[in-house]
Length: 306
Ligand SMILES: [Zn+2]
Ligand SMILES: [Zn+2]
Ligand SMILES: [Zn+2]
Ligand SMILES: [Zn+2]
Image (cartoon, rainbow, N blue to C red; front, side, top):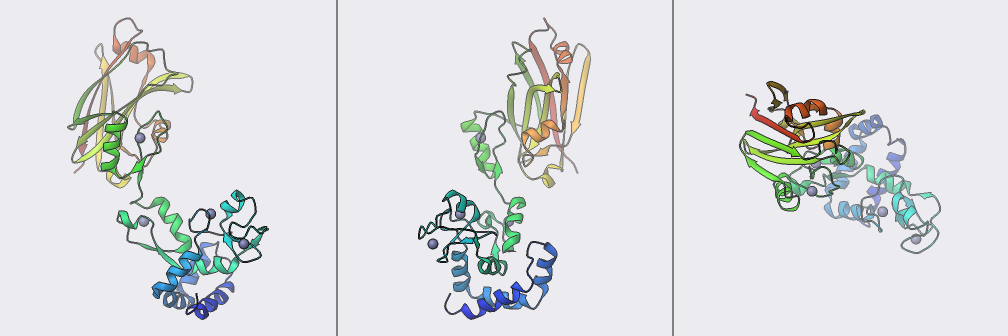
């Protein structure tokens, strides 16, 4: 940090006077205060920003460090997660770490402004160091989780990638068009415990929608539920509507709804009961036959609101 060292020290000192970085208000005040000018000048020099950036990288996990940042008596730093992981022994010199906070570095971090980690995916915003993590949790460019339910799948990515993943790795049925007629058949309708997870992907309006169908217990009542999720963000999901219809023997149940974004987990949508719910008795009545086998015809339509 040689050439920028003097400026850096000034920032540390002036910022320490403001102490509490944990309250948002003080952050806001700081950013509007004269300190901000020093920060900008400091950040304007790319080399020193990179140097500081490197200083803030934990030597163990390589992630950026957030308070509390710890240091050994020789001044080597480590993040709080890794401090536990390395059993209190400095990863650089093996000296015992103790509980020495590196307040100076925590304060320097506060003066930095960094790009969102999803910059490469299209987010071009710059954030104060301590606001960056919070933004990234909600950044609209962050990758989506795989929408497949019923199995733990940790795959993440953008929508085109996930569509390929569903098709190739989960062998999910893909359908083109905005109307559908689907049959769900299960030889033993009593098997609610082994919840049946079914997913079909519909491709219409140049977008993709996941139709979920499953069996589970709502309280103690065995039910079947069908609902639609939109492969994209919620603000776009709200531009669409859908209906689902199931029936037989001259009766019919209709559900009209708005697809949920796959940002909402499958579980969350299910638990909020935001979809077509069919009690098992009614489902068996719709199925006709011997009341053992489940044969449900679900018809649906997706449209875009004007
Ligand atoms: Zn770490
Ligand atoms: Zn050390
Ligand atoms: Zn972002
Ligand atoms: Zn998956």
